[in-house]
Amino acid sequence: MGTHADLYKRHQAVMPSWIATYYDPPIELDRGEGRHVWDAEGNRYLDFFGGILTTMTAHALPEVTKAITEQAGKILHTSTVYMSRHMVELAEQIAEVSGIPDARVFFTTSGTEANDAALLLATSYRKSNQVLAMRNSYHGRSFSAVSITGNSAWSATSLSPFQTFYVHGANSFRSPFKDLPKGEYIAACVADLREVLDQTAKNVACLIAEPIQGVGGFSVPPDGLYGAFKEVLDEHGILWISDEVQTGWGRTGENFWGWQAHAPEGVTPDIVTFAKGIGNGTSIGGVIARADVMNCLQANSLSTFGGSPITMAAGLANLKYLLDNDLPANSREIGGWLIEQLRAAGEELPVVADVRGKGLMIGVELVKPGTLDPAPAAATAALNAAREGGLLIGKGGLHGNVLRLAPPLSLTRAEAEEGLRVLRHALTVAQEASA
Image 1 (cartoon, rainbow, N blue to C red):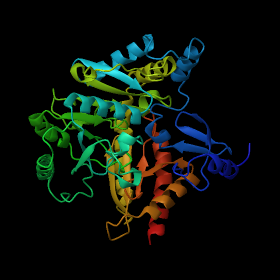
Image 2 (image 1 turned 180 degrees about the vertical axis):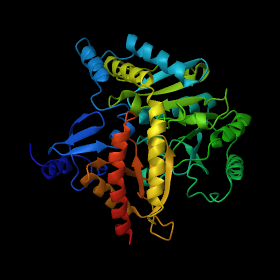
Image 3 (image 1 turned 90 degrees about the vertical axis):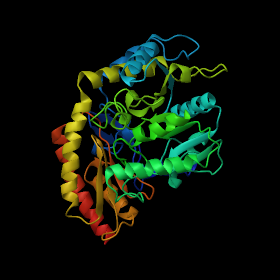
Image 4 (image 1 turned 120 degrees about the vertical axis):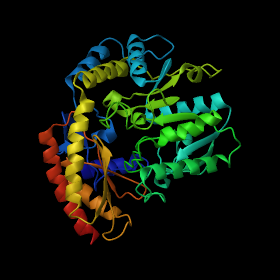
């Protein structure tokens, strides 16, 4: 089969240079089971990143693989020009758990495509190409998604189909308002939003925001921020899009959707986008919106691969397993314990500036000791040390200095303890690298 190094040479010869990879050389994952994966050289790892928060329940979950196999034996593809029972059934369940009244669901193949569709809906509904986005944000790699990205590390071009305005508040650790108490912090961000709106043509289409920023380093705004924003948005008829590609399906533990930490009962986003975890590795994304917004498009449309029979069968089985086994509660319990333990470990290591997150969505920000200067080299050292110890983790943040931990939601306490042991050592290595 050859080594990772051999395959990487072939990869470099035929793949784009801008595809980001971890490790030197990158590794090839060959199989997975539960919360563990094996690379092509036979090394076993505890997976604390889940294919960028995509393996939501478990690797090779029998219920999901059975549903895929049975559907594959019947028909793989139809497209949306034909009805699909699995697609209707999954849409019904998603509409029910969405919280959005009179919800409609459109399936795509990725989070990027879902956010594209949401932006198309919002700008068409409002007849405006003005968009509000959050600083440090990430919403995908397409031309439209990149054009509203507030994180320069992932923004490949300054060309844009939108006039985008960026708002303060999502990255409270590095915000200029970070030293304010929560209420004053939110008030300052609302004042900033109003000041930004004063600079627009008074017909902004939408605000798009991640409840917890993913690529931005699992940055957590104070609860209630987007609810306070929505009061201002409603004054102008501006739509609120909640990008739940990484926070949805109970990953934060405390709620099924990330937006629920921000809005009072009865208040919902106008549009919600989702992807990643619902497919547990199959390509599912989608948009949920109230009927008048979803149905505003005047032209015909369809999706060739969105809502395919095989991915819908996987999504149905995966969602059922998630709900039947109350994995959001497990995320709350195990994730809460991990956050406490990591904060305790960080108190002894000056390289650790912040441990944040909710449930099994945890960020560890590393800095040069004695400062708040980002320490990307320390993060890389920790990433490599974790791998050497048999643990796969992620990395992110504007400066690449934040460790991202997002295991499958079925993570056990014993596996969390195993991962914590490796993480403690990896943070010690990061401390040495930052000296």
